[in-house]
Amino acid sequence: MRYWTLVSFLLAFTTMAVAQSHDQQVRAHVDSTLAARYFQKGVNIDTNYITRPTTKWTVVARLNVSGAKIESEGTDNGNHFKSEMKADYKSTLSLAVSYLGISLSASLNPAKLMGKYSDYELNFNSYGKRFGFDIIYQNAHNFTGWHDTDGMERIELPEEMLSVKTLNVNAYYAFNSSRFSYPAAFSQSYIQRKSAGSFLLAVSGQGQHAKLSERPDLGWAQEMNLKMTNIGIGAGYGYNYVPSQGWLLHVSALPTFIVYSKTSMTIGDTRVPLHYHFPEAIITGRGAVVHHWSNKFLGMSMVFNFTNIGHKESLTVHNIKWRVRTFFGLRF
Image (cartoon, rainbow, N blue to C red; front, side, top):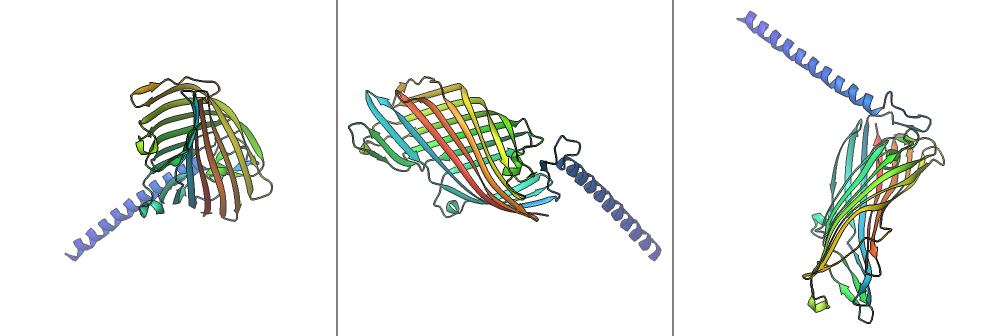
């Protein structure tokens, strides 16, 4: 009996050892595959200018602050008008963990947790060596501002009167990707070692639905709805300046001219005709300052979106959306 018990134990131990060995081989294979992809073996990169960090893990803490503003100007029945609406600033804290380019992050909005902020915003971005994009979706109804009409008293526009749903998309292609790195400035998955710039191709898109509710007590008698879809194509330039070892200053501009526009506005039951007026544009600007030393890095980055449509003799609308991010990270 003891003999068979010993044999069973040895067989179970051997099976567990074989399974464990197989799991270790699978993990080693996955790890080597990810490492080969992450460190770009065989890919055209001038390592005198850009390089990958030598570590596998990156942990980054971020503070994000964003805002939005809508400006309009035009003429209604011969009277010039102008308005401006701003959304409350949004602040979030986030923590991201990356292993060989595979990232997982979590974020929270303290004001939302305390019930002081009810709007919704989603930011998704990917900064690749050659291709990259930003996607920003906002559903906001906390805009406040004012409306002026010639010969009339200014109307103060309170919260909940204007609600806006906006989707902004911007994508780029970098020609000089072997020496110029967007990720070095925005995701820190590369390190820029020498100054370099690149011409950029860009595609931008914006979809928006803005609704201004009626408020007879404020002299606003009818509900207004503005819907727009815009797609732009253009080109720009980005530059990474390395003033000394461990420092990076980035600036880029991507102006795109709108090639497709569909806009409609209704006031009450009346449809107001809006016509394309050249030049209508979507402009994306980015900037960053990054400092890295030893296995640490810190910095600040900014993304700015500006959209201009229409003509002030009838109606022009400016959409402004921005995000500022400060960050501190460790590599190991």
